[in-house]
Structures are given as C-alpha cells and as structure tokens.
Image (cartoon, rainbow, N blue to C red; front, side):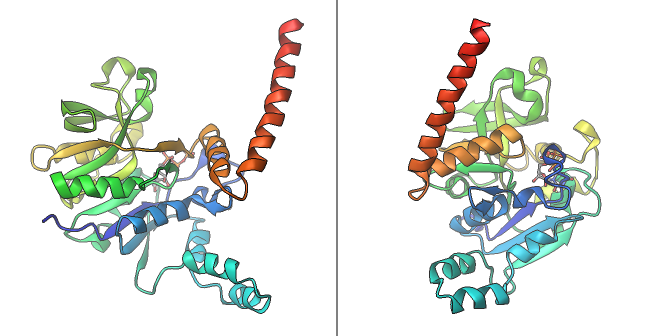
Length: 302
Ligand code: UTP
C-alpha cells in the first residue's frame, strides 16, 4: 500500500503578466471561467482526489484568494434573509474547514520550483500533489484522481502529460522516455523548455504532479535553470534513478488558462457544458461564426 496523498500545494505566487491589466490588483488564479475562479476548480479537483490539506504558496497582492476560501458572514446572512438558499449552498461549498488550509508566502517569484520549496515544512516527509490553477482540465474523472490511481499502482512521482507539436516543446518540461505503453510513459530524464531540435520527445508535463518528498532535498540546492528560475523539472529530474518517474496521458482536455487564447477557449467550452448556459452559448457562437464568415468574405473579395 502506497502512502496516501493527503496534501496539495497550489503555487499562486506568479505575476500573471500575460493578463495585465486584469492582474494588476487581482491574482490571475481568481480569473473566472464562466462563474468560478480558476483556483476553485483546482481545489475541487484536489478534493475529489482525496486531498485533505490545502497549502497555498502566495505572493504579493494575492489576499483575494485567502478571502475567497474564508467565511463571509455578512454575505451569508444577506443570502439567508433573502431566502437564496441555493446560492448559500454554493458559497458554502467553496469554504474549507478550520485547520484544512495553510498559506505560506513566496517572497520573490523565483520560479515554480522555488514556490514548491517554500511549502516544504508544511508538507514534511510524505508524498503530495501540486496543482497549477492556470492549467484547467475538463475531464469526466478529474485529472488528479486519475493520477492518484496510477500512483497507487506504480508509486514514485507521477505527472500528467500530453503530446504537443514539436515546435512547442520550448514551452514545457519534456520527458526523456525509456518505456511507453501508450498510456503511461516512464522517463529516464527530463528537460525544461528544450528547443524543438533538442527535445528528447514531445511528451510535455502539464500543471499536475504527484511527488515524493525527495524533491525537496534537490530544491534545497536552489539551483537556477531555464529562464534563470528555480525549476521544479530540474529537481524532479535529479531524483530519477532513486524515485521512479512516470507520466500519465490523462483522459480529458487541458486548457492553458495562463494564455489569453486558452482562457477564452475554456470559457466557451465550460459554458457549452452547462445545462443553464449551453444553449445560449451555442447561439452566441453561431451568431459570431456568421459574422466571421461575412468578414472573411469581405477580406477575400477586396
Ligand atoms: P507561469 O509560468 O504561468 O508564470 O507560472 P506567471 O508569473 O504566473 O504568469 P505570466 O507568465 O507572467 O503571465 C505557472 C504557475 O506557477 C506559479 C504561478 O502562479 C502559476 O500558477 N508560480 C510561478 C509561482 O507560484 N511562483 C513563481 O515564482 C513562478
């Protein structure tokens, strides 16, 4: 029996520069997809995978995240007095029990590896999950739950992976694959953001990790990697040989909500899935599709 994954780290210390000015005073992780902030999707995914302790690594200007998961007595009383019980339940579902949540601070955004390292004392000597809220996964079985199932079989480190076009490898951590059964790929090494010509494969890590605590020992070295940042990929890579490393081709669709295109697409995809909004959204898309084709005709005929 493998040690259970009880704790999850949510690194939310990044600057979110790609969403300025929206992210000047508001954390990127609070951007809503339809009507729910990205960070709440991530938290619900962790909860569905059995996580009981939620550790947020925050930074400057991120206090809205703490408020979001806290009681809001005034708002609750108002909803109750107006008989808005459904909304009240919805609000309460995002709250965390006392002692279930911890916040620590990354004083400087020195990279994802550094953010994870900042939570080392809160995790201690046990396996844990890391979820990046800006990678949103739409799946029948939530992505982290799929990974925990695989972890329970094979142990070690398990990350979520997907195949990307070769010209995009410079945006991801890439697996150097030693064995691949089409669903689970075992790595003998990892490279962060390689040029397409140097990439050992096109199998890319997305923002979901199940990690063994050995990674903290490597992060202790505080070595800088690609982009002069302390990279989680480098620390994970150095534990290969000691800790097995497997990538799971998860079932589902991943939206890169750290980019504008990915974020907009996620809004469309999630709205289409909603019973209360799907039909309206489909009509909106049709209307705009009509406009686009007229516009295209205009361009091509001029
Ligand atoms: P990104 O690479 O998307 O960086 O981080 P960013 O700063 O958030 O956004 P841009 O590129 O400026 O628009 C990926 C994830 O790692 C976290 C981010 O919060 C995000 O969830 N992160 C990154 C940290 O927590 N600390 C860091 O030092 C860097």
